[in-house]
Image (cartoon, rainbow, N blue to C red; front, side):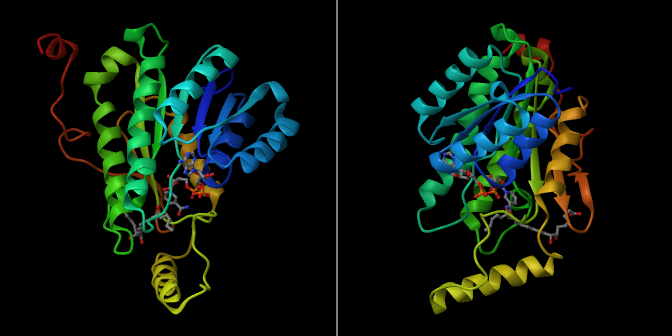
Length: 273
Ligand SMILES: NC(=O)c1ccc[n+]([C@@H]2O[C@H](COP(=O)([O-])OP(=O)(O)OC[C@H]3O[C@@H](n4cnc5c(N)ncnc54)[C@H](O)[C@@H]3O)[C@@H](O)[C@H]2O)c1
Ligand SMILES: CC/C=C\C[C@H](O)/C=C/C=C\C=C\C=C\[C@@H](O)[C@@H](O)C/C=C\CCC(=O)O
């Protein structure tokens, strides 16, 4: 997809990877709605981006992605403000912590909801013009993560969701590509500090950073953004799971069975269901 003249929604856009994706799309001529629960950071980021790219190119909407009403209202506001929607980036995420239900709600339930809303508004079968949904999973969606089992479970879910909506069965009706991205650890505020405040936290931090160092360190945001732009540009990629690692750079998770590893289901198949 060429981004010039397109409209995108990015969740969790106030900082980190979401900010990087937003900035890259603005540079390529898109308009972007930034959604985030961090209102002050979101406003500050939006102001900075507006000064570089133009006030009419950005819109900040305070939104807790786990609140279904707030998400629905945010998508409506984007359509009212920009008049169209072409790209949805379900990026908001949290690392593993004590509240496992919240990790599930932010990292998986909201991504399912954002995907369904994107499909509702962009699907050709519902009068839309088609489009693109990119769900930000993680290498923890493909591999186990010993210090983040719930996080890994949510990211495996995001990969399964994206591969399933990214089948020809759905694309034939929706015209919406759905893909997932799986970067390894990247240098954003989600990373814990190397020095913790309690001995117990320090043990966890040491284990985390040993794991990161063992992978060759953190990815830079720009490395993940480069992969993101490749995925946006390549219209042949649907149901694709992009990996980004220090070792191999950008590549795709191979699946058996003719690319997607699933039986092909055509429009005819669907009409018989
Ligand atoms: N940084 C990494 O190592 C890494 C690696 C692979 C995948 N990821 C994934 O990339 C995505 C972005 O992470 P990041 O590294 O930029 O982290 P980050 O913490 O810098 O940014 C996450 C953003 O999501 C927002 N957010 C969190 N909960 C929210 C909610 N309920 N509603 C709305 N917004 C909410 C935060 O306010 C923040 O702005 C996440 O899904 C993360 O799991 C990160
Ligand atoms: C605070 C934590 C925040 C975010 C965590 C991030 O999303 C999690 C990443 C989790 C796992 C990373 C795994 C990295 C593995 C690499 O060392 C390497 O083994 C992967 C290399 C290649 C994989 C592809 C292949 O099989 O060839």
